[in-house]
Each structure stands twice: as C-alpha cells, then as structure tokens.
Length: 114
Length: 115
Image (cartoon, each protein chain N blue to C red):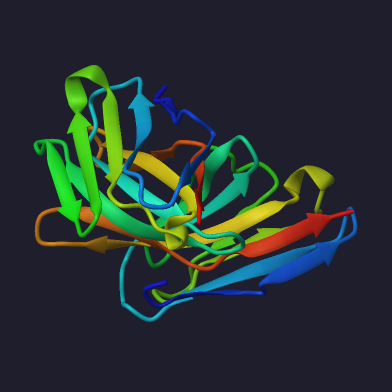
C-alpha cells in the first residue's frame, strides 16, 4: 500500500455517534484523498487535500469533515453517523512521477453504522 | 459529467485462457487512465497507467490499451491464473483548467479464474 496506513480497520457505530478515521503516509507527498466505496457505485471522492493546511470538497462531502494539520496525516470525521455512511473508506496519496501522476491507496476502513 | 462503465460486472473463465476486460468513459478529455486490482477486503493496487497520448502499456501478462477518441480502454490478461482472481477497476483522471484533479472510477469487473 505504498506507505499509506489507515486506522481502524473495522468499526461499528450506532446512529448519531461520532468518530474519526485516521490516515497517515510516510512518503512526504502533498496530495491526499478520502474515498468511499459502495456496492455498484464505484469509489467516490469525499474530500481531498492538495497540501498541508488546505482541504477541498469532493463529490460526496455531506456529513463529513476533514483535517490536514500536517503533511503526514489526513483525518476524516463523522460528527453524527448515519446508516447511509456504512461503507468502506479508502485514503489515497498522489505520487508525482517523471511523466505522470498516480494514486496509491491505503488498505481501507470498513465502517458499519447501525 | 464523466461516467465510467465496466461491463461485465462479473466474469468467470477457466485457467489458462486469455481474457479482455472492458472500460468505457463518456468524456474523452482525460489526462490518463489507470487500471487497479482489488482483492476482497483489501485496498486498491495500481496495475497499469496509460497517458492520454499513449495507446497501450504492458506489464508482464497484462496489456492495457486506450482509444481516447472512442472512450474505451481494455485490459488484456494472458494465460490467466487462479491468482488473477480479483476485482479490476479502471479510473480516468481529468485535470481542470484550474489545476484540480478528478479521478472517476468504474464499478469494476469481478474476475474469477476457475482452476
């Protein structure tokens, strides 16, 4: 997973509970991303961060907040979890190559909201 | 809005066969296209990336082609093995005029290689 770690691996929440998903990279890259993956929907971008201290909304940001306090970590927070947020969440980093850019993904966090 | 489609959603083939996975996209103004592999319960692993100016890329038994004008890409797997069983996702990358990057994923093809 190219140095991208996510915690926790699994989480079960009750509706209305809050939690923070953590993502960390050890490769000193600027851009980091949070996606959710749902059956039949593909991966959808929730938020991204082009650099430390900056964040931008993706395709499905509602119900989430993010924080990029340093270059290494990018966290995703659910303030009041809903069953619709049951999903697998992936963090990714963008790696700049000589000719192009590519993304590397973490192992994912499987979240169930009851 | 870019839409990426992968058909079929699932595919089973006997071991040793060559096979082709398909990916189509609606907006041909892409920066590049990437094929990923995802094993059950795991994250995504990048397999091949094709720049918009390229026609194909090869890595071992994998060959990915890109026809940007028709909005199609294929992933060819030669001499399939049981270890190739996984879900294969394609994703197209677009860069906006403001430099914002957007990666749009297909829903994937779940491949099963039958020993």
